[in-house]
Image (cartoon, rainbow, N blue to C red; front, side, top):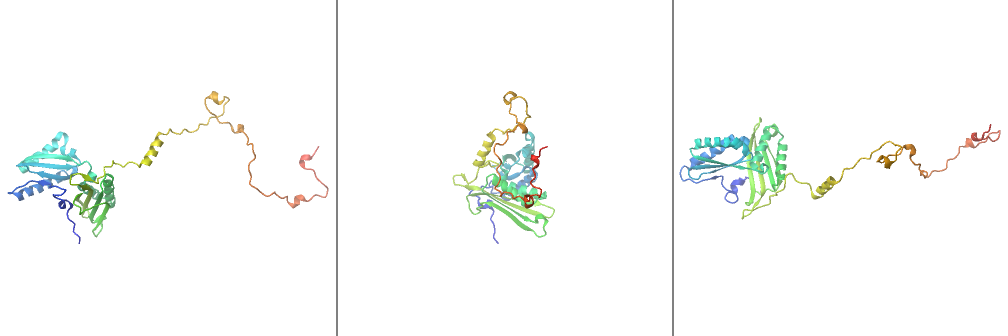
Length: 306
């Protein structure tokens, strides 16, 4: 069976950096366990805020937490009340001075973790899994990513036997170290069981100078092609067509009445030329009309005289 390496750990030190940045010769296991508990508790507490990732820095005896979220207003709260409460709870729990930084994710459709979580929420609401996957793939491509792959596994649609379904659109070079590939994983807890969702998003290549190549910065939604756009603008600038007005005939002339009037049917000029008929053979008179009566010729009704 083919084994897949984690896309994030595969690029650590090359194009990705660590999400926990500190060093300790003593109490390493204790600090590592504290990091994991902090991240788990923050994810559970901020489940409605769309948290993408959490980074931890430990300068000295201080603790700096950076939260990447698509809804920063939920974490900050009104006038910063929620974030101050969160900071006090973490300081009491860790017994350290805590600093919290909030970073907004401007395009959640291109964040693999947020995409997988959104699919999980739809599956828990009994949305068809193919529809949820297709919607996520189309949204990511519309926002400019170069490739995306979505994979769901479990008892899909409540089937007795678990199976795996996946969609792939665009490019996904998993073994290219300079490729900027984002990876996310989440779980949907349905009535039939747990369904796992994995998502890979390819955003382009990261060059040695730190420049990114390949990510399309197209506006959303996409504009119409130039030809259709020119035709649409031309139709919009054209004045609206006015319907012809039909007024009853009047004794006044068109110049006096201030408009054009249509003549009555009786006043319409007659056709000057005879109608064109298709060529036909001359009609023959029946034989009984050609027989003359014994009494002689009879005058037609039009020639009778009184």
